[in-house]
Length: 124
Figure 1 (cartoon, rainbow, N blue to C red):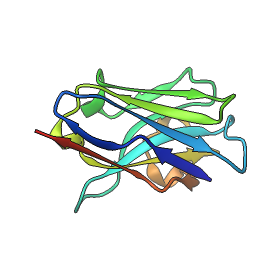
Figure 2: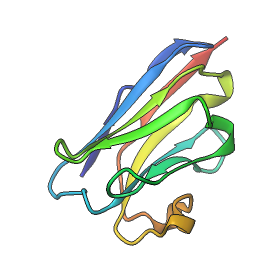
Figure 3: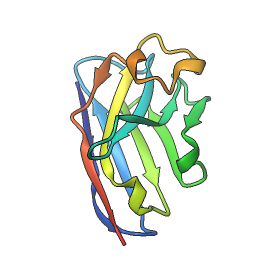
């Protein structure tokens, strides 16, 4: 089970830190990712990190602003979001994939477990 939290309402240019805690199993050997879904849009890839945290991937629109990290000892991943824009408004989901290659980190169909989502709203 994945539990995401940390969302909220923030002004343009502000910051938020999302967390995703895993329970019921150890996800240290899983690729972990963040996806988001805005109203009326498809769920899209945001960021992902491999087992040891050596490899990360970001969608172009968040590069330089968002940072994904993980703490395997705490079975938790994080998404630090800075310089937030109105277009970042969405429900953010964390996900875990057992067999996700580096090339497939951005493919939501490759992930096996999903959290319930946390709302991020950026107001101008």
